[in-house]
Length: 424
Image 1 (cartoon, rainbow, N blue to C red):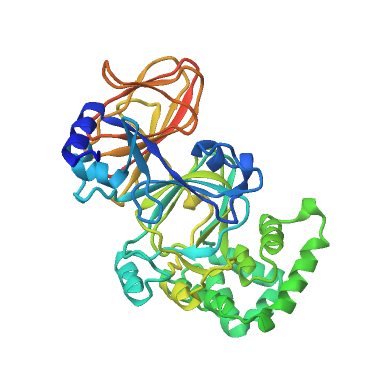
Image 2: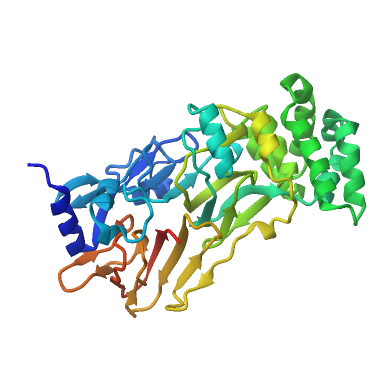
């Protein structure tokens, strides 16, 4: 017999913390088999050693919704939240859809050169081309490194881009003087207005991305050969990653983006925040990712998928900053300094990193709406305790829905690392 919404709501009120089953995306760029954090955290058994495990999705997005397990019964997470005001809390969407999408990514091969539209533009793209832009929502996103992580993010300062033009005559030649000379001039003039800097950069980058293979392949091969003949120890970071992109995406115009965009290297626990229209491409590593609930991506290179070059070059934010300025720092929770809060200006999402390295219990702060808790690492005996009637062992990959206002306690004798996604 089917469980009624009222019965589900009563069970939710009693439990407050509910197990989730989450789904894996096997995109070709993912790490393969057991090397993938996604595979390790997904609960997939057995792990296929030949299968890429690219993304673990946690949330209510219609493409790959999570399942809540209540007394052995599987229910869509959105249905559970819709049926229980107490679990849902102050979420505006009473149909149970979360405003955020929580993920783990494991990257073995560089993703596409891409950006995400703002809310208004997302609505326009969805109305115009719903096949390629399935959502009418924006998609700002936060990435927190779980391992050493590398990505392209935002445009470099003009002086760095101009230096690459000078260092590589083929790059300057294929773009032409009309695109490169104004950039050189703007880079050499300290008081050039930011608006003018952005316009000269837009002209050069647009010229690059619109080149046909017949216009750039000979220059691509010339630059590639010049870098390959260099001693490895003398190659710059951009040269190293140009070769990596060239090996993963041969003869692709996107390889040249290493000369325009920052190469950002993150250590475990460091983060990137990608707002609307910021160009980026993840290169390697594993990360926690959280975003507004959307799957809209505008792509223009390093991908076999649909490319929308004209849309991308018109929408991009052409402001320039250093690689270090792309990083997004957390703040310590005032309630417990073992909790680090990544709180962007967007209200759709925030992420708490919870790292326990002592034996002191940690009480999760109450939140006014439902959240998702993921255990990334836990030593044996780690538990989540919610009142006297709910004790749950935590192991790597445990994923839980935590109801609004719930304050469960985590105990661990030798350490645990968890992440919690929530709406602000």
